[in-house]
Image (cartoon, rainbow, N blue to C red; front, side, top):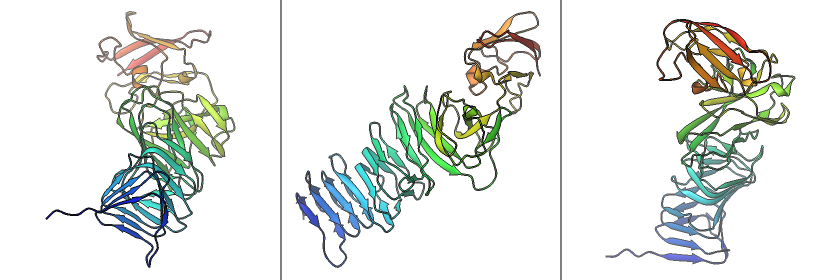
Length: 385
């Protein structure tokens, strides 16, 4: 016997009434035409198919165990002053609107194809679920009262916005456009509740508030820059020009400067943008020393034990036009590069010859550093063990 499928087409404004004022779509196809409004004062459970080209408004839970067709132009609005549960079963919304004052807890990944409109109330992740913003989608709104509490993924070439916060403060992060269309990265805000962040000697202070986890799942993040918010970071520095983005491969230690290419506002409400491309997994805001003189740490170990694994030149990032050369005792050049940078592996001397990439023998070597600012060339020796 063939199963009968009920097709419901809604082309006008309708508010569901009844004892529960909810809507249970059991196996039917419900289609909202353009400009149609379906308002559900309570929960909506879908085990059939909903095709939304109109305006679907829900004030209770959304349990999607069937199919939600996001290919159209419709929007869905979660609007309640009470907590709402959203289980979209790892599917897409064309346009998602968050309003009312009740917190929205989402239990599975939500993909946004066109627009995320954060008007009021927060989207809070459960079960590690994340908001996924496809290339070309936009984020509107965002405030202390309305943001995402949990991971947000961006995809594609464009300018990325991560509308995250900690439940009371909006802390949006931006990443500038890239050159790799395959780029997919997820950002998660981590608030410091105990302990502290530490970094190299160039960093005099690091944020005591938070750090961000940036997980690259595809692509390269080539040429992208990271813009981090400043919120209640009093005490970092009295000189805003010394603020930088700092990155590390460890959660709370090993941070080093990624420089500053732009600064807005102040330590209470502002932002700082990195100068160097993104090569680490964890990031925070920090302040560097006001000292601009370079200092060469001339002990180098090639044992890959995490200690003195490269030639560190303090403050070299302040001189982007620098040129560093290293020769052996017979005057043979073993390394030369423009734009030496402690934070970028292929822009620093790791004990490998620039041609061939093989480790150089232990011994005494000599360096010359041209800062590219007209000052005298700095020379000295380094010891490789």
